[in-house]
Amino acid sequence: MKILVADDESRMRKLIRDFLVNNDFSVIEAGDGQECLDRFYDNPDTSLIILDVMMPKLDGYDVLRTIRESSKVPVIMLTARSDEKDELLGFKLGVDEYVTKPFSPKLLVARINAILRRTVGDGSKPVIEHNGIKVDKLAHRVSVDDKEIELSYKEFELLVYFLENKGVALSREKILNSVWDYDYFGDARTIDTHVKKLRAKLGANGECIKTIWGVGYKLD
Image (cartoon, rainbow, N blue to C red; front, side, top):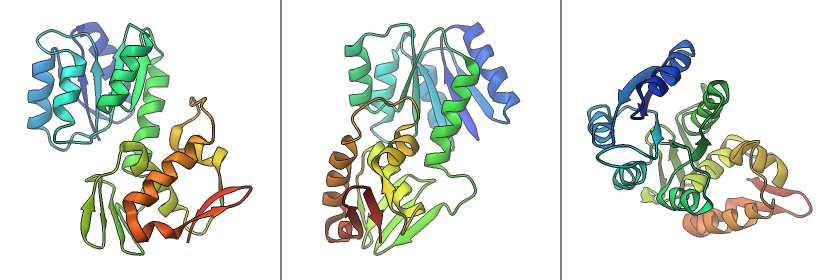
């Protein structure tokens, strides 16, 4: 899979590139925000972007804002700052993960693999259909009765997880561990909020997501 690495520090790009190449990824590099956008538009098959916050010409937030106008490609943001306001802005714009410098390259690769397993899959079918719901994992698109709907990144991941575990009773903790990853420390009840929003967007088809009292949810 193709990863775009955007960072104005050449040593940082080389460090990330070497680890990614050793893990069988193809790597594209960009040294500033504008070059990142140019590289991305020249490579529409990019699977994930690693994006530094502080870059010349356009910073990471401006790049992310532009990319999100036309694409839901997963984005991991690198930052030397850990200010809560900055992170909240990133999540509002559509960042998928934050990694604070300095970081472990092995951990970065692990997070990349986790995101790609959820968005692309691990050999399972790229298109899943159930009860009028159609999910194209590669294109990151969802349609209900042939009408495309817009889902947030986490709503998309949650729906895919339900579809890939059809008929299985899933606890809130299991959903958190699988969809939000091991480093999520929020209230498990956040699942209820996301399921409610997902059901609403699916309309009548959302009734296939059943509540299992005392456990969690199951897709029938």
